[in-house]
Amino acid sequence: MSLKIRFKVIAAEIIVKSTTLKHHTKYFLFLLIIAILNGCGSDSKDYTQHKKQLFTFGTLVDISILDNNSQRANQAIDSISSEFDRLHTLWHPWNDGALGKINQKVSTHSAPVIPPSIIKLIEKSKEFSTQSDGLFNPAIGQLIKLWQFDQLDNEEHIFQLPPTDSIQLLLQKNPQMSDIQLSLNNDNDYILHSSNPSIALDFGAFAKGAAIELMMTNLKNQKIYNALINAGGDLKVLGSKGDRPWRIGIKNPDYLLNKSSQPILAAVDLNNEESLFTSGNYERFFEYQGHHYHHIIDPRTGYPTSGTRSVTVLTKDAGLADAASTALFIAGPENWPRIARKMGIDSVMLIDEDNRIYLSPAMAERIELLTDTQPIIIKL
Ligand code: AMP
Ligand code: MG
Image 1 (cartoon, rainbow, N blue to C red):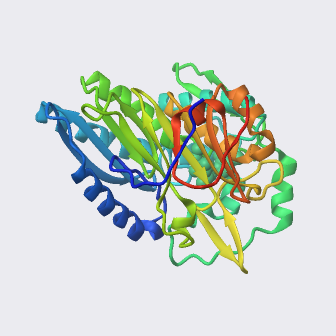
Image 2 (cartoon, rainbow, N blue to C red; image 1 turned 90 degrees about the vertical axis):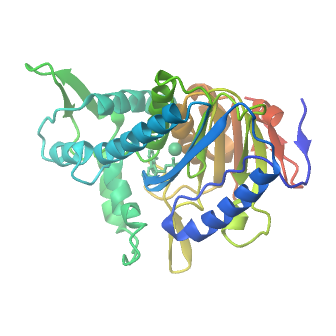
């Protein structure tokens, strides 16, 4: 096993994760660093890089395509930009899009018609939920709403803790993906039945990955074979960056919290079709009476998960990477290896609340840590 630990500036593609508007200033600072570092590197002579940044799925999404046909690359960028926006509207849990309407109807016992893209989300989510022993549970939308995480980008919102009895009531109702069944109606449309009216679907832990996976298929259909789609640090690559692999930096949580001057914690070279997703307790949170309440909820307690700072997952399927990073975050330092095995994930980095770094052997082979913390290697 070759575990490389060293200190140096990475003169390569550096991606950092920044999901909240509040972090935009830092994000732009990072982009400046990236631009400078990229300027030092040598891009492929054969391909031109085409880039676009959009704000969608609550985050900045950077699309980079390497292709020698500018028209094809720009067309592909335009088509996936509008597809991202379309899916964001369709999959938003509380707006007037398809999922928002489904959530309203489920709570009133009616059986809504489900569009094909949401059928796929539901089917996959049922699978991931079972594999993760229910830790990944998109059926807890009402609980997530109770915590007001849908208000994190609203500067005006004054955060309060949800009443304990409201949390307990929702826990008793125990919404699960297995409470949901899909069936065909007379018009050959799929309709959703829920045996549990406390269900509300929130695909926040999975939607970005599922969308990126669809966009990459879309790009390949348009004969684009070298690309990076980076949704605030959650990303997937196709091919390479010219004559070198896509090199990705994993941000240092302490830097974002102004506790360290080192922006990047680790780097990894990604191969064709690989995805890298991180879930962290520093990404989306509010402070209340001096305490930090973050957005990843342990469905067993109804409260933000404790014990984990971040989990990074490397695997091919972006949807699985997204769902698994959330599930392993909740599984925590004790249980992540078991849940990783059940979900079919072999490359994981988990940082616990005491800043211990745990690596699976496959991740240790791939990652280059840029810190002096000695990692703990855990066999899966
Ligand atoms: P991620 O950043 O991918 O870990 O996803 C976090 C988001 O997933 C939150 O903002 C919620 O919308 C949603 N979420 C929180 N807890 C859970 C959970 N236990 N299962 C599924 N989704 C969750
Ligand atoms: Mg996730």
